[in-house]
Length: 275
Image (cartoon, rainbow, N blue to C red):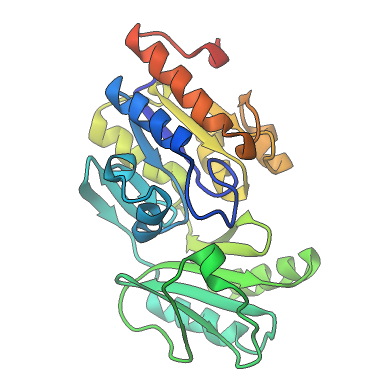
């Protein structure tokens, strides 16, 4: 039976730009928890963002793989933090500063910053990245827990910018969670790494885990877990990597699947959509 559910956030359980998950989704998470199945968001979002998305319902994110598994918690207990080298973050910020349609978002402590040239149009930062992003012209000081590059450039130019970043910092890799952004992470550390940490903490095997995703940064998770599920709006590569397929994020398909998982757990079976 499933004992742990890991789910991406944006465009998997909540449309990108939406401010919060639905009541239906929160009820489904609680149904899993009541059935003895842990639920953990596996997302590039930080813990503050999870608090906002789940309307302060702490049970829904007491376990988490936040900031692309660089902040890992189980039952409200911090298990691990992984930081990005500050020199690398500064190097990337300086490298991309001349780009008028690109800016860097980084998190130091509990604060999010946006850094770019004076010509950057930051648009409606709050709609996507939350209300507390501080625009700055100062490079980061302190432990950087997350780095995201946001842009309004073509897909071809995005690949060029990604190549610039990875070429300047060989210890980092870029992954796109959605159109217009890509996350920068330490090589060898991703959502699958975080899944393994939680599995070790819980003493379970990968066959007892179910994962949901939609995009490139979910690929390590989808490839590592046999009970992998893609939503109908998933990027083609994520859909191809998943073993199972459900409805769209906009239709709250993951919530329905969570209710199915909760019901199956009561009898020690696998959920109906996996049989």
